[in-house]
Amino acid sequence: MTIPAPLSMPPRLLMGPGPITVDPRVLQAMSVQMVGQFDPAMTAAMSEVMALYRTVFATANEQTLLVDGTARAGIEAALVSLITPGDRVLVPILGRFGHLLAEIAGRCGAKVHTVEVAWGEVVPLEMLEEALRTVRPALVAAVQGDTSTTMCQPLAELGTLCHRYDALLYVDATASLGGNPFETDAWAIDAATAGLQKCLGGPPGGAPITLSGDAVARILARRHVEAGIREGDDVDSGVRIGSNYLDLAQIMDYWGPRRLNHHTEATSMLYAARECARLLVAEGMDAVIARHALHGRAMLAGVEGLGLRVFGDRAHKMTNVVAVHIPDGADGDAVRSGLLADFGIEIGTSFGPLHGKVWRIGTMGYNARKDAVLLTLAALEQVLRSAGVAVLGGGGVGAAREVYQEAAL
Image (cartoon, rainbow, N blue to C red; front, side, top):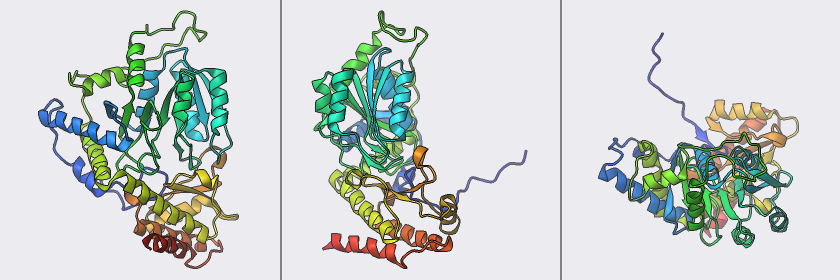
């Protein structure tokens, strides 16, 4: 075979819904040399990761750690460890990733119940309460920010409501943590997972997770339940669900003071996760969220300044990604290809009922900054003009500049 040249990738500005351009400081941290997984320097770094992510998640939870794998590994670890086959699980669905939670819960042997709204909306609290009263689930599994629709599900009252009906609350905060308010303890959230590749400013491959005392108790109790189906459960007798790699009971032992061997830690990803959190905590979580809100507002104003229509309920939009309707007559994929070929800028398409109907433009992590927003808007204007779409000259950049000027006053 012909030996390929050393790996080299073209410069890109990733302004889609994620992954995003990695903060150079995180890339630098990833180049730090390996140490043994039980080297005192390594275990000290693991302890630092736990402490840093307690601040990021706004929690005092002792069991706050990292699952090795992409954000989905964190989701699966949470669900496979919290669900015993036959449990009733309630999933509010406002987009593609709610459907994902329902699928994974089903694979765990749960009896899955859903409450679903049209894409572009969020699930009202009263609808969730009615479902809780009717279903009486052991677990509610919710997505905070669903990037397929750019909607942000309100959570402030949901945890308390779940506990009123004896249910635990798990939240997938992959796309929202760090860019939108998230208060694990204040909102009574029992388990939450995220990914590095969105607002946290890192690469995919590490999944921070935090677990309340009640969630830990559920996980440890599940460990003692026979791996098969519990007697009397009305589920398919052929279902046998379990995971070794994603078993949080074992992972907690690995991260805990006993340091029981479970797997070889993904060392470079741990370095990345540590630096992601270190940078956020140094900036201050309130400041990080405010930064995402500012640049999100600027991008929102900018796309409207170009004459594009924003998709969905603006009152519940994520700060860090905006969906815009593809203009009539424009080839959505051709515009995205033009941005990539001519300017090295990537924006996203969408899924399901929104496929081919909207673009998704992100302002998150390292790319939640003024120059990235203005450059994307200027480039988008030029590509739209080339595609024959009528836009106001300078309208996007001008509208975004007004947001920045107002913020500076």
